[in-house]
Length: 171
Image (cartoon, rainbow, N blue to C red):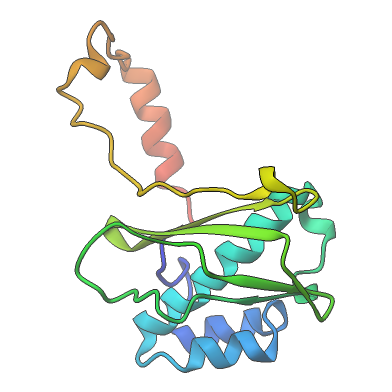
């Protein structure tokens, strides 16, 4: 998810007002502890991605109230660090007020201001519940053998016009 203001929003403050019920007080303290709008937006989307990853992993979808989740991001994971990508697995979640130690998160800060998170739930806590995370690596450039033999899709004039019409619709 790109950590920027959504289209049509005039400021981070107005966006945060709209989203206020989606985060807990602890989460808002984390967001507000970051200076400046861009850092606060990055912190907000980081929490949003953690919440979204739990809801997707459980399969509950939009019927699950995000306010039931209280995500505590790894405080040592710095979004303004120069080296990309960065990965952490030290964030935790509280569900309905109780710490849930059976959830693991993999968070990524990716180029061009994107953040991502993946969650999975450990089952049983036995020897098989340990997960080793490997560092994120980008795929080789498109000129490599990964694309050998692929044929580009040719775009007709009609499909190009349809796309332009779609892009020109009001937001």
